[in-house]
Length: 346
Figure 1 (cartoon, one colour):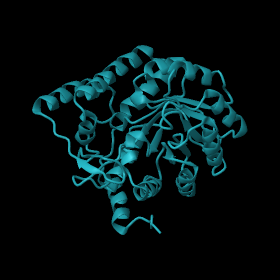
Figure 2: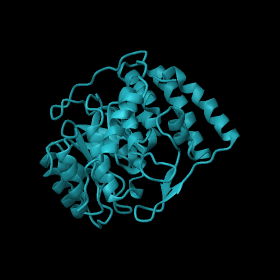
Figure 3: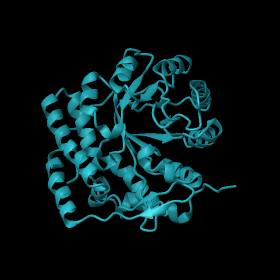
Figure 4: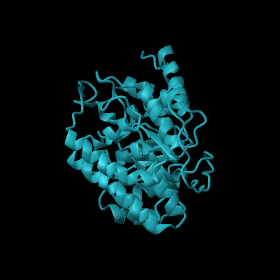
């Protein structure tokens, strides 16, 4: 049996992250509060950041940095902390690491304002239920699951999400990507689940045809309680204007910018939203030209010690260090400087 309890060293690491991480400056304008969700007391709206999983130079998970990242996201004013999903390198994490990470995040930052959303997806229903029961015992604010990768039909999706619904009464996000190839959960299935289980009424939508699906889900309010964009916030400006409830994506290194975008949107400051979002796209574009630029920013901002990632899958992972040329670093610095008016920490 795997022992998922934290070691004494890891407990000290979680406390050390809170003690060592420097206090963040307050944003120039306080965020506008959303109406609290009745199930949790925390709003299921806004900028929900999927944490990147930090690794040591040797490729081991750095639990201290994971706790530090959660605190960074929370103090940046983001509305949600999510782990582990695709942006968390979940495919390269072992079962033991996923279980331990759930506990690290549940134990860290008890005073956090951001909602904690724990990822419980599995290749099949049985695997998902192991993670779901563990997560439920840790009392997060919500759960999220990708569809089962081993499924071959919508009926299997239905069985999987119905089983998840019966494990918890907390809000559940249905992620529409990450399941069987070329088989996204139909909108009709998402509506059916929400009707049968009112807490399974939140969608992380990133399947084609994207905008058509989002509009169809929005038309199902109030049965559908939350529709979130994703995909590294590539379409978030349009999605905000369509009336979506937020974004759930792996941009934790820009958590304060994401929170600021939502704040400006909620205040109706559309020109400022457009300007801030345009500056964000400078960084998104750069990450395509300079792979690893986002992790460099995470290290630059004092959150991660390394920019090491993993490849090869959970069973045979290998550490992959990031090497950037001086020219690449200069370009990152040049573009990052444009974000500074919208950051809480410069």
